[in-house]
Image (cartoon, rainbow, N blue to C red):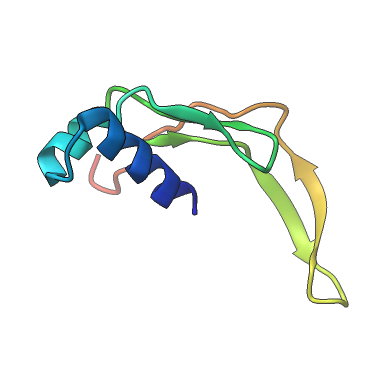
Length: 82
Protein backbone atom coordinates (compact mmCIF):
# COMPACT_ATOMS: atom_id res chain seq x y z
CA UNK A 1 0.00 0.00 0.00
CA UNK A 2 2.87 2.38 0.63
CA UNK A 3 3.99 2.21 -3.00
CA UNK A 4 0.44 2.86 -4.26
CA UNK A 5 0.14 5.88 -1.98
CA UNK A 6 3.52 7.24 -3.11
CA UNK A 7 2.59 6.69 -6.77
CA UNK A 8 -0.70 8.59 -6.31
CA UNK A 9 1.16 11.44 -4.61
CA UNK A 10 3.73 11.55 -7.44
CA UNK A 11 1.02 11.51 -10.14
CA UNK A 12 -0.75 14.38 -8.40
CA UNK A 13 2.53 16.31 -8.05
CA UNK A 14 3.34 15.70 -11.74
CA UNK A 15 -0.26 16.47 -12.73
CA UNK A 16 0.13 13.54 -15.12
CA UNK A 17 -0.11 9.76 -15.42
CA UNK A 18 2.82 9.73 -17.87
CA UNK A 19 5.35 7.33 -16.34
CA UNK A 20 8.51 9.45 -16.94
CA UNK A 21 6.79 12.50 -15.43
CA UNK A 22 5.56 10.53 -12.41
CA UNK A 23 9.07 9.08 -11.89
CA UNK A 24 10.55 12.59 -11.79
CA UNK A 25 7.94 13.67 -9.23
CA UNK A 26 8.86 10.96 -6.68
CA UNK A 27 11.90 12.85 -5.39
CA UNK A 28 11.36 14.25 -1.92
CA UNK A 29 7.84 12.89 -1.36
CA UNK A 30 7.02 11.86 2.20
CA UNK A 31 4.08 11.02 4.44
CA UNK A 32 3.39 9.64 7.90
CA UNK A 33 2.89 5.88 7.65
CA UNK A 34 0.49 3.90 9.88
CA UNK A 35 3.55 2.14 11.35
CA UNK A 36 4.47 5.41 13.07
CA UNK A 37 7.39 6.30 10.81
CA UNK A 38 7.70 9.03 8.22
CA UNK A 39 8.15 7.39 4.80
CA UNK A 40 10.21 9.42 2.34
CA UNK A 41 11.70 9.02 -1.11
CA UNK A 42 15.33 9.96 -1.60
CA UNK A 43 15.97 12.55 -4.30
CA UNK A 44 19.12 10.93 -5.66
CA UNK A 45 17.76 7.44 -6.49
CA UNK A 46 14.08 7.20 -5.45
CA UNK A 47 14.79 4.66 -2.71
CA UNK A 48 12.38 4.66 0.22
CA UNK A 49 13.48 5.58 3.71
CA UNK A 50 11.28 3.72 6.21
CA UNK A 51 11.39 2.23 9.68
CA UNK A 52 12.81 -1.25 10.25
CA UNK A 53 11.13 -4.04 12.21
CA UNK A 54 12.53 -7.44 13.19
CA UNK A 55 9.97 -9.93 14.43
CA UNK A 56 9.01 -13.55 14.73
CA UNK A 57 5.81 -15.38 13.87
CA UNK A 58 3.81 -16.33 16.96
CA UNK A 59 1.37 -19.20 17.63
CA UNK A 60 -1.56 -17.06 16.46
CA UNK A 61 0.18 -16.58 13.09
CA UNK A 62 0.78 -12.93 13.93
CA UNK A 63 4.06 -11.19 14.60
CA UNK A 64 5.87 -10.42 17.82
CA UNK A 65 8.10 -7.38 17.33
CA UNK A 66 11.54 -8.20 18.71
CA UNK A 67 13.23 -4.94 17.69
CA UNK A 68 12.45 -1.78 15.76
CA UNK A 69 14.57 1.12 14.62
CA UNK A 70 14.36 4.41 16.47
CA UNK A 71 13.76 6.27 13.22
CA UNK A 72 13.81 5.64 9.47
CA UNK A 73 17.41 5.00 8.39
CA UNK A 74 18.62 6.35 5.06
CA UNK A 75 18.53 3.57 2.44
CA UNK A 76 21.85 2.31 1.09
CA UNK A 77 21.68 1.07 -2.51
CA UNK A 78 23.10 -2.41 -3.00
CA UNK A 79 24.58 -3.83 -6.15
CA UNK A 80 26.14 -7.29 -6.27
CA UNK A 81 28.32 -5.96 -9.11
CA UNK A 82 30.00 -3.10 -7.25
